[in-house]
Amino acid sequence: GRAWTRVDALNETLKDREVLLRGRVHNVRGKGKSAFIVLRQQTATVQVTLFVDDVNVSKGMVKWASALARESVVDVKGLVVHPEVPIESCTQKEVEVVCREIHCISRSDPELPFLIEDASRPDSAFEAEDTQFVRVLQDTRLNNRVMDLRTPANNAIFKIQSGVGTLFREALLRRNFTEIHTPKLIAGASEGGAAVFKLDYMQVGPACLAQSPQLYKQMAIMGDLEGVFEIGPVFRAEDSNTHRHLCEFTGLDMEMTIKEHYDEVLDVLDELFVSMFDGLNERFKREIGVVNEQHPFEPLQYCRPSLRLTFEEGVKMLQEAGEEVDPLGDIGTETERVLGRLVKEKYGTDFYMLTRYPLNARPFYTMPAPDDPNYTNSFDIFIRGQEIISGAQRIHDPKLLAERAEACGIELPTIQPYIDSFKYGAMPHGGCGVGLERVAMLFLNLPNIRKTSMFPRDPKRLTP
Ligand code: 4AD
Image (cartoon, rainbow, N blue to C red; front, side):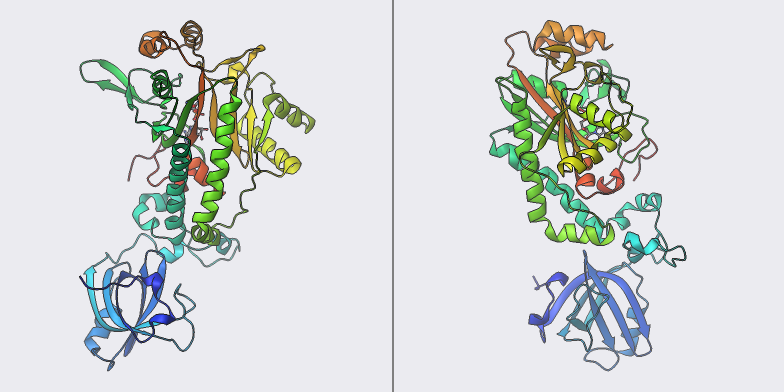
């Protein structure tokens, strides 16, 4: 095949060389006998020039190039030269390409839903009241998601999002955990409550989409897999129209045997998340910088070992700050944010663990605290005051488990095989579920989970 050069590899060392490029027409200006194309490949841009009377360039060719619709895919063969002044509007400022051949590979519809440059402007561009810039609204972006993904920040966000999953997997494989794949078509709710998508399953009857791999990852532990994890879709039929809820998200789940205390799970998570944050900062330096240009944010502060507070300590901090909280209830989203700010002020970290939640605030399978049945061996983990993880030690006594399920209104027959899996000798165990989109959103301090979900599913959106 022919030798292609990547646009992001174009620099002064290639001066006087002929290169072959494939990219999109980011922008084109025709001026009489000349045309200037900004050629974009992923997030890199370079200026391509055509002058009538240059080698191979005719009047017709300049006219044809000037009329190319933005976003069309073109192949350009040309000479790398040093521009008289740096091309400030391009990422490759030190060079430009004098065009010798240009072919259109795929024409774009000239009616674009929005311009990539409008969709890429920094948030600050819209702060002034008299701003001339067109703001591309979230729904417009999501309705035209493929176009929206072409902005530099979005390209970077989905590389970082991918990194979250990769680093989670790597950290657990290092610890000899086994990656598993559990069914998403299941007989009954895995998290209780009404928030399940119901469907009819062949000749069996009613079924639902898994709200989590919870029951099956525990069953894998009962199958003596010791430590397991899964990266897969999670379905929630919650009518929550918020910045942090989706109806389908990617769950990073893990489950492991424990010997003495559920702190053992927290120890694993501590190392896992610190290595994940370190890994993101190291591997995605460039991408983090790109996101920062459009959506400036403070880098995540975390410490090692991570901060652990009990729920009771959290309640005390909140009460001292004048917040009203029920010490045996759950704390709401807004109160969580307040606690996040208090923790940041006192301990200087954006990442912390809150342990020992009240029984009323946790799902049926959660192990009650041995010293006080009002509390549980459980935890939530937060980034910037928002929940990214919830986890716990699980009940491994089938009798107690059935009692708790019934008390929580679960129809026992739908989960009987799960309860039975603890009948033949059950290892004490615990684990957690992490929302991948939330980790990516909060690591980058983005304002909405739809920014870190490629094709978000929310109560009002099922397409594209
Ligand atoms: O808190 P959740 O519902 O816990 C479970 O699913 C348990 N099975 C976990 C366990 O192992 N005990 O969900 C876990 C995480 C949350 O902390 C949050 O990050 C994310 O999943 N999450 C959501 N993300 C996006 N949209 C939603 N609707 C979410 N609901 C939960």
